[in-house]
Image 1 (tube, rainbow, N blue to C red):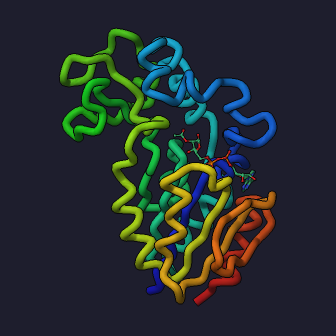
Image 2: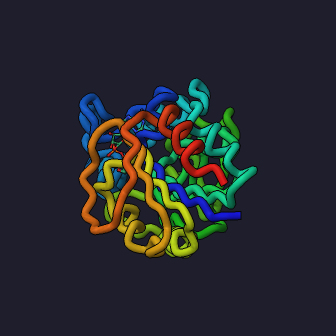
Image 3: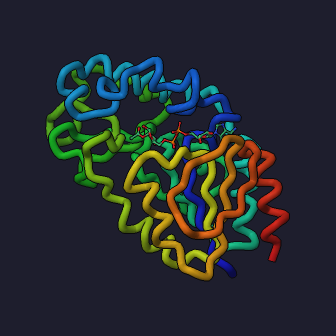
Length: 232
Ligand code: OAD
């Protein structure tokens, strides 16, 4: 089976009703990124940041995977699929993908505020636990914080992602503005003989000399077209 590696971003979930970050009307227009997506913002106002992620988590109960997520799940019948996502929602999993690397963390998980990447403290929340309160503690006795990789923090899963990209026969970039590193740098690890596709309804500026097959469509229509183009 050929190896299909996907790098997804917020646009993947847009048709499910989750806002992107940098488009007009995006999340970073409403909430300053320094406030809700940095360790400094959290240190300054943990209650506000906790509320912000509680709201994002609550939204998970009301949204569903879109056709794009589902087609990607179905492609596992024909390809060895690895999904590398910058998204913190769980829509890839719910759309049928079984090998998902979450570069920027997961909304459904919480962790210690002192030692966030220690696996001993990372905990999966049940849907009835989604509303985290100030005073809810991790196993090391510190306040539970969202299991989200904030700006300025290391991206522990990047090595695993690089290994997957280095084995790609087909590499697909979908729904990401390619503004955030190290995720955007994964393109540099795509083998020379692999095919590269980009699915996005808007132009994306990418700094590369590689040939990129652009599918200028939204995630659902774009994934349907990709599935036809790469049929084994
Ligand atoms: P952006 O908001 O930067 O980019 C979203 C991309 O999705 C843009 O290129 C849009 O054109 C595209 N898009 C919009 N609608 C779409 C649709 N229906 N189908 C497909 N694509 C569509 O989001 P990301 O690139 O994911 O990090 O942002 C990367 C990271 O920055 C996020 O993971 C987050 C953010 O700050 C953290 O929170 C740490």
